[in-house]
Length: 48
Image 1 (cartoon, rainbow, N blue to C red):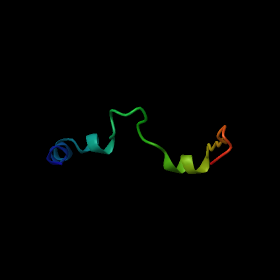
Image 2: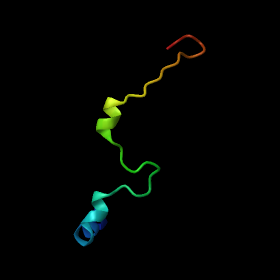
Image 3: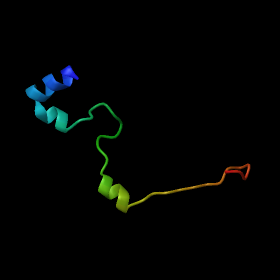
Image 4: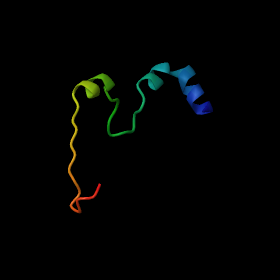
């Protein structure tokens, strides 16, 4: 936490644009809620 505090004081924009090392930068929650991409397939055994 202390490292984050040092980063926040030194370069606040760095924290505002986080995360940096993930496959997906930031998710657009509004777009995700409006454009649902849902899929469900039953299991081969027929049980839930």
